Image (tube, rainbow, N blue to C red; front, side, top):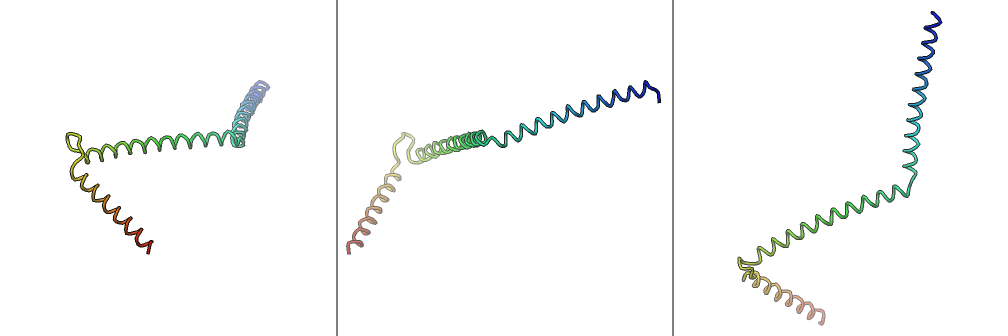
Length: 113
């Protein structure tokens, strides 16, 4: 082997080692950052709290939307084209009120005995 090829190979080996050292440093820095993130309990708690708030807000909006839709459906089925309450609804509501009143009266009388 000539001195020139030995010097060239030594230079390549040094460059390769330096590249390996740099890569190892980057990997180590990422590992330290990841460990720091895991150990930061306050930040993790804040993140979980924020995520929970976002999910709760989404569920609330979904529930509100469903409630509006159901309200519109009930209103449409309980009123006629003019917006007046349909007769069937009034009769059914009256019958329900009378039935509930009768149940309450019977319950009170039975307790009184």
